[in-house]
Image (cartoon, rainbow, N blue to C red; front, side):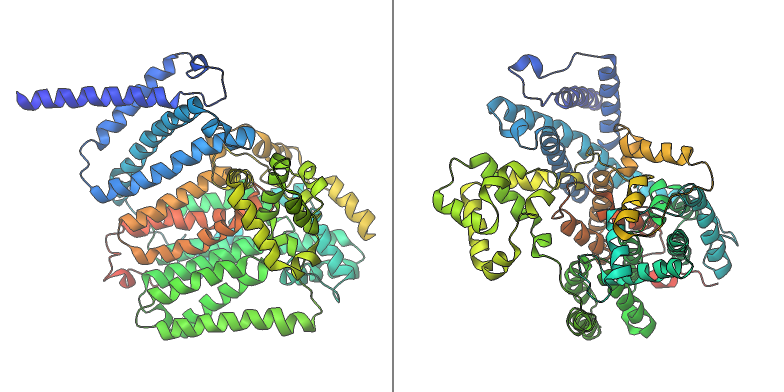
Amino acid sequence: MKTNKIKKYEKTIRIILAMLTVVCMSINLEIGEGLKDTFHVFSIMDCAYVILYYLLLTQIADCKDKRAQICCAILAMIFGMCEVIGYSISRYCNLSCVIGSKLTFLKAVLKFLGYFATFYSILLFLFTKGIPKMKELKDKKLKFFTNNKRSFLIVAIIILIAYMPYFLSQYPGKISTDSITEISTALYSMDNMINHHPIAHIAIVSIFVNIGKACNDYNLGIAFYSLFQMILTASVFSFVIYYMAKRNVNFYIRLLCFLIFAFYPPFAGFAITMWKDVPFGLAMVLYTIGMIELAIQQEFLKKWKNRIWLLLSMILVILFRNNGIYVVLLSLPFMIFFTKGLRKVATAMAVFILAFYMIYKGPIFTLLKVTDGPIREALSVPLQQIARTVKERENDLTEEEKERINQYMPVNEIGELYYPLISDRVKDTLNNEAVKENKIDFITLWLELLAKYPVEYVESFLAGSYGYWYPEAKNWVIWEFDEDSYEQAKQSLNIEVEQTPIINPNFINKMIHGINYTPQTIVSAIFSIGFVFWVTVTMMVYVIYQKRYRLILAYLPVMFLWLTTIASPVWCEYRYIYSMFTTAPMLILGMMSLINNEDNKEKGIETNIERK
């Protein structure tokens, strides 16, 4: 009798919590004049949401796992804050929807509690019931689609065929303003390069552009580059499937990853676009595989072939993006820490990478007459913060502060030039030489203004980066069919190039345009940087929850890349974080299967490898 009363009491509490959650989630964060604008009009869907929340709470009601509760609570707090702050930044590029007044702050807190309850419930269900349920997923053994060379080749060919409609409808491939700059260097300035775009990628572009020049058909050179990159992409993605099979990742997970690699439109669209981000994204895949192996094999570095694999993947990451060095450098201490018993080897490898980078940036750059790009490229965040301060607090700045700012940027212009989402207009005004000669003074000025105007600094940073952590942020994903780029190439490079589709491009063009500009939907989440970031972080925390601390190594490269990306010049640029999408099938789906595989325990993980 007593038990029935308790159960009835618990059900009542869950109903009340579900109703409160729906009420909090329905709060309007828009700046209104009073309470009348706080809640939306009741709809029948609210009843459905209450029922869904109730059912979800019922599923997790018996959870006694304190570790899971703590991990999910931390994630729910982070995601809830991202939603509330991200909404305000996306609407007004400031925190007015959060700290604009006492009422807005109260609404923001209540909205946050609604998000917290929702995310906490979903995450706890996933951690304790959803992901573990995959253990019951039956595996399937096939001669095809496994870890043998024949399967690797067939999968690569299928992926390549899947990309062909994009290539034929966008022939000879896609070029952007960045592509034109690299082509220009490849044709006219190889003896006077600037390291704004990686010279390794320019060298590859040069090979194909010069093939086109030799054939008197630059379209052919661009087409060969597109085919080369398509083959490279298909091969790396096929290798991921091969590797998953080697590690006994469930067949259905491998199949799902294959479908993503073959039919996820951005992969095909990027494969035919002349960007450094594509080979970098593939290099990050190889580096991530190396880090996974380092994590799951205690003695991975004992074999020379494994050391060479890891070193080469690090070098490729460094060569194909200028921020690749930060990804590698930040990963090295963790690599050394987790290689217990082989730390001397890991340290030697770290020293080798550092020596390589110093030689590459020193003697090799000198030999090839390569000069570093302007210092402004690394100062997007502080320059935007100073410009926002000038715009918002110009009347509060002292004459001395204005004079000091004016040494580096025209103080009378940067306030008007300031655009919260992109730093190009502000950073183009920077006096690079003045910053180089007075680095300490510039840093001191930046810190002094930070101390006086912290809100402006925080709002500037959030406005310039929210696309990388707020799932509802929307920007273009795939470079579209662009005749203007080809026309610009004709005029500026004095070469004959033209897009000449071999098949009707209408379907591909409409699909790409829809991906780029269709309003947010559930489906569009798979193209959202913020959403994929959230899911990747969730899996990393799940690894921590499972006490598989070594597996954190697998997530470090893409997490460190994300850290460098939020300091980039653009608020939401898919190509900057393309590597998070190329590695996601492994770090999200593949890792679920690895963790859930009952044989992949600390003792026996190395014995669970198919040998064909």
